[in-house]
Length: 555
Image (tube, rainbow, N blue to C red; front, side, top):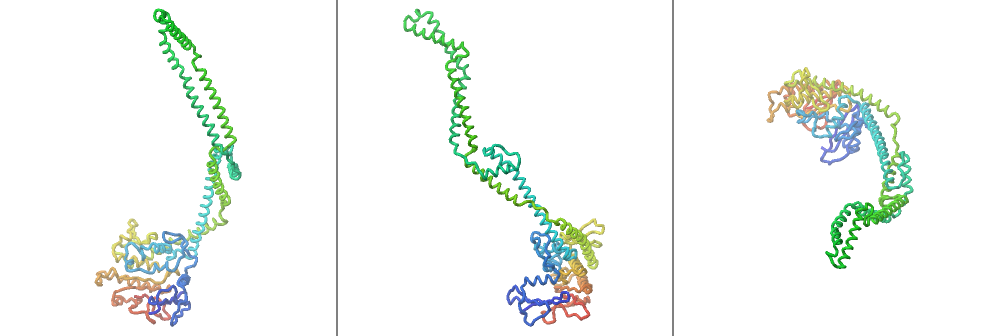
């Protein structure tokens, strides 16, 4: 086999698509003919990417139709394609009896997100117009939110800079660059800009300042010592008193000089000591006179006058030279100031933008459309539940008589509610492979009935079911005692195809291993066995009489 192809009828027009077999190698091209012509030897005439666009258009997928909101795997604004709806047309052997998922590929995050984004479209809760309105609404709201964030960011930046301008002005004043801190914000900006444009050129005065400060420190240290001496007069007087006491014996010596020291030299010494004792007594009696005290006080006062002169000289230098720190500090400040002013100037060049004219009105109009569609969505989901329960009347769940099924859009599962709604049985807890088969079949037939009834173009009119007999056959291929439950499924599938004849036809493809004699005994007139290679007129789709709809179920 060199080529594989398919002919599709869409709105009365036939489309032929063919691809080379794998033995001929992989290719990104295919054969396409929009007039239904099958050539003897096809040629590659269209790229696969372009063919996807053609198929999307043929099945009603608008080129502007995009995912309105993103997720972990699918970005907002991603295009919706025909492939997104194939999830509603296939149930593999494991999925068809799965207790915790309804759709295939449950671990494929991107695949599951695509189902979430297209589910409402599949059940007719959303059409191209409403989907585009939702997309446009999301786009406008995103645009408005972005602009609001920008305006808010500009406002915060302006407020933050206003506070920073005050800090920069204070720092300039501390540096001595400006005489006072301006009162108004505008005046601060003007003064700071002037500093950048006409900076103060600092002189090297550090050495002179250090010299004066060093002299002030030295004189202050000396005066501390002199002050300590002056303040310690009582202690010094105590020493003199002790000296006086030690000299008192001189009086006795002096009164009996001839008897004690009968020599001229001794008498002269005693007389000298007598005079010193008199001087000490005189000093002790005087509160103002003290040895060296007046001289110490004079030195202290002279030092104080020198300190005052030096401080005045230092102040004069600082007034003449406003930079109180070394030049490097000043230049670093100027660099920061210039950078901050540049940022502020850029912010002034990007003024706050008002909302675009009519943006809020457009959002309000689209929101009304979306809100109205939300009501439609609720009705569509109620219709889905009604059809699921209609199928379950013919495919009754064991152990759940009179329970009602409700589809959970968020979980993509079917839960069961008791008649009084007091009990909810979650789908994973329902139990029994047969029950799960019934739930899966009922759900997917309901989805396709809605699609056919409402003429939803993007949902394919076929359903592939793999091994619906799984719950009813043992590993050795023999049927169990519940084989009649399988018959109910086969009968329901056959009847579904018949019911869909009035809506344009439908095809169910069963991949099964049950014997032909089993399903033929049930008189299922829409079942046809396909058990050999598809060639010529033999295939999944049989030629229908002119007065019959081409809607068959195939096995």
